[in-house]
Amino acid sequence: MSRGSGGGYDRHITIFSPEGRLFQVEYAFKAVKAAGITSIGVRGKDSVCVVTQKKVPDKLLDESSVSHLFPVTKYLGLLATGMTADSRSLVTQARNEAAEFRFQYGYEMPADILAKWIADKSQVYTQHAYMRPLGVGKFCTHFPTYLHIYTSTFAMVLGMDEERGPLLYKCDPAGHFYGHKATSAGMKEQEAINFLEKKMKENPAFTYDETVQTAISALQSVLQEDFKATEIEVGVVRADNPIFRCLETEEIEEHLTAISERD
Amino acid sequence: MGDSQYSFSLTTFSPSGKLVQIEHALTAVGSGQTSLGIKASNGVVIATEKKLPSILVDEESVVTNVNQMSLLQVQKIQHLTPNIGVVYSGMGPDFRVLVRKSRKQAEQYNRLYKEPIPVTQLVRETATVMQEFTQSGGVRPFGVSLLVAGYDDKGPQLYQVDPSGSYFSWKASAMGKNVSNAKTFLEKRYTEDMELDDAIHTAILTLKEGFEGEISSKNIEIGKIGADKIFRVLTPAEIDDYLAEVE
Image (cartoon, rainbow over all chains, first blue to last red; front, side, top):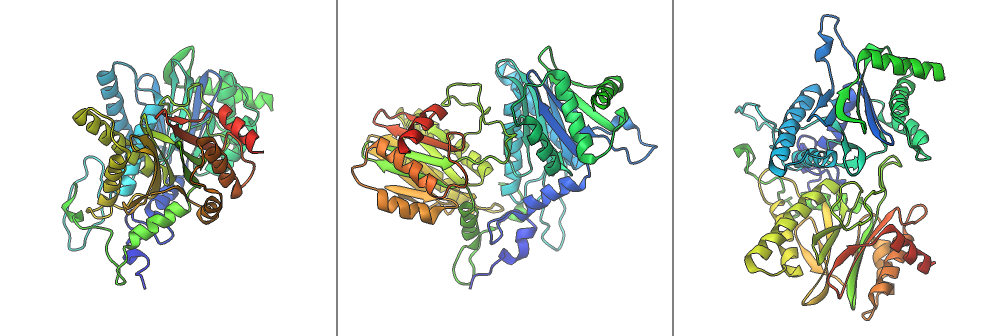
């Protein structure tokens, strides 16, 4: 009779369970949801918009340092949903990778290539039990320490491609990545995807304003609350301005007003 | 590679002499989307279901040539060399790793011997990689089975490689969710003197057997290689033509 669950380690490190599952990967997905934030990304005809909640847990915190939206290069943005520390580490590595790409190949790293690189990195963590990110110290104890450090983040990569137009990619902790017309990550991921599927069903070609407003109203609908401009972060790239930009509070305010007047 | 704390294999023998991690990997393969391959007298065809997690996933491509390396569209069937293609059942991210390693091995062979790598050699090297991950320290086996289709001087060939690293040459094979129905269907339909077009029709019919929902050029992928020794993924338009012929 076989031993069954591999000595119980299938829950500690990334080895297979008897049903062929990777529990650590599944737990990483749960950790993303536990962060309590939901993010949305929408791709329009000539622009991409990502929106995420900005939850500042303490009034004494400097809100400008609470951000999940990161420029990776001038033209590529990354929205990281999940554990903040893992996100920051990922962004640092992504920035390095994009800069090296530009140096090596002489042109800007496209969004899909960056997404693939992030996804391949996540896959390594799902297969190698001991992989750890930069800068964590080693220590010895009596008991074997299962250092299966894992990246519990969903990364949405957005950018304008010269030939192919607006691009939105999402990478998950398991190493999957797809291009999306619209997508979501975080606590209310499934509800948001259901909402967006309805909106995108007829393959609409959203203008810039429609793209931003669809993203924001999706978040409002799914969380069932109306936001103030300071409670969300919005990042965009557009054909007439391919630089990745976080919207100012006033601009967010305008879009929120437009949404409420529309309804 | 890596931590000394992990210089022991995670894939160890059970008291009954089995390597349970490999069996679990096979279970992971068995819950993946169905894929299959058929070797004809004048070529090989491989095919797979392509069920995407949501309609929001972008499967359309701005690029008209599906045989260009483009990440814009989801493509499960991949080239390893111009005359060897591969499809998988199981975990997509693991497949990407193997594709990358195999492509590199093929190119290294080409650089050394100034000729394209024979199909058997590439299959052997890929299988060796997969076996290493069942015995090396601190890693788990790959959660994919591969179907490698190629055409070289020895003619058309189809190989299946499993997570254990064992590989066999097949006349026709299937993997994934619907494997037993598909294999039974293939056993009935396969003939030694089948031509490539017949094989493509049979492949479509086999996929149709266990297909949930309506089969269309958007939710399957087909790759073929003929005596021209060029592996090609069929365009959605070509798949539509074959689907119409099958009706």
